[in-house]
Every structure is written in structure tokens, then in C-alpha cells.
Length: 96
Image (cartoon, rainbow, N blue to C red; front, side, top):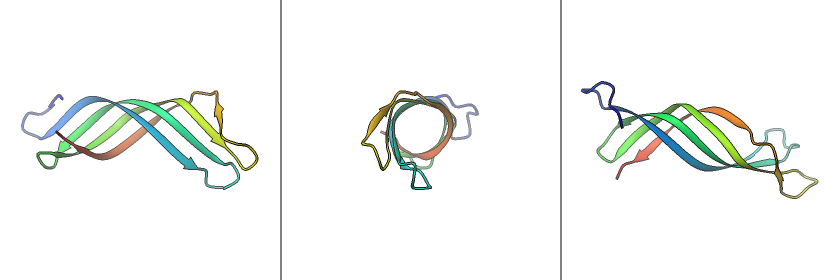
């Protein structure tokens, strides 16, 4: 990690996340979508404790390489479109 200001415990670092997202759409008629994605980002990390940090990804690019879709009439099927979206993420990280 790169520390932009030496005396402040913030770190700036590139990161890559691999994830799975499962969700239902709000109106209940559209069904459910499942995504498997990879998300490169530029991460800002603040160490709260020696083994625990808070991370903020202000520029996360999410690339879905597998999207599955199911509605009330059809079974789970693969959707061929690969959507790309920008996200902002906030979370915790355990350091080892």
C-alpha cells in the first residue's frame, strides 16, 4: 500500500474483488438476478486497530462475467449480456 501523507494512517492501494451477488427486484414481478463478478478498484484504507481496518472504494468498476436470471414463469437461465457498472463500496478488512 501507498501512504499519501506519512503521519496520517490512511493507505491508498489498488484492489481486486471477486464476488457473488444475489438479489430480488423490488416490484416482485421481475424475478431475481444473480451475478458473479470481478471488481478492480482504487481503495482507501484506514487502520482502526492493528488487525482491523475500514476500507472505502470510491472508484470500483464491477464487471459481471456471469448473470443468471429467473422469473415466475421460467427456470434459472444464463443472460448473455455482460453489464459493467461503477460502484462505491464501504466495508471492513481483517489484516493478517
